[in-house]
Amino acid sequence: MEHHITEPFTKEKFKDLKAGDTVLLTGTIYTARDAAHKRMIDMLEREESLPFDLKNAVIYYVGPTPEKPGNPIGSAGPTTSYRMDAYAPRLLDLGETGMIGKGQRSQAVKDAALRNGAVYFAAIGGAGALMAQRVESAEIIAFEDLGAEAVRRLRVRDFPVTVVLDSEGGNLYEEGRKAYLESRA
Image (cartoon, rainbow, N blue to C red):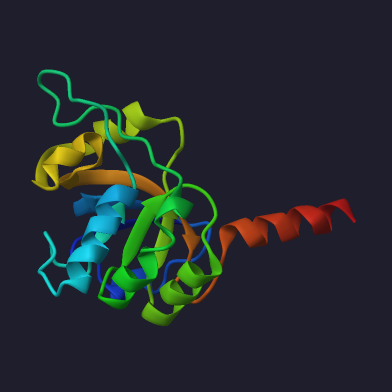
């Protein structure tokens, strides 16, 4: 099933999504990879404010290439998500509602997503140029010294993602593997 969802990206808007659903997101999302996640956790440990409000935040695990003239962003394909697994549960507990990346997640992330009614989306690996076409604006808001890994605020329109982990514990990767094995029996 395909869904069009606009911000705010609340738990309520994500609660009816099921693993395997296609979603087109429109609104503000944030970029952060492992170095930025580590800095954010360090900031929380020092009781400092984060560069953006985590409430209803969707974080895209991406380190885009430099933009070409006239474009807001360069190629913007997803980063392997497990690199954020040490940090994601804390951010989910603080209000993050969505994560975008590629690949499997740890049990701790799955548990935190379920506990918080959050969703993990997969973006199309290898299609960074396509993903970049859905970005209307991009602004570095923190950690500029990290270059491609700086935190950016992106304004996206019809940004295509697939639900991997839904808010009720559905898991596209596990369900797909199970269906395949059953079809081979």
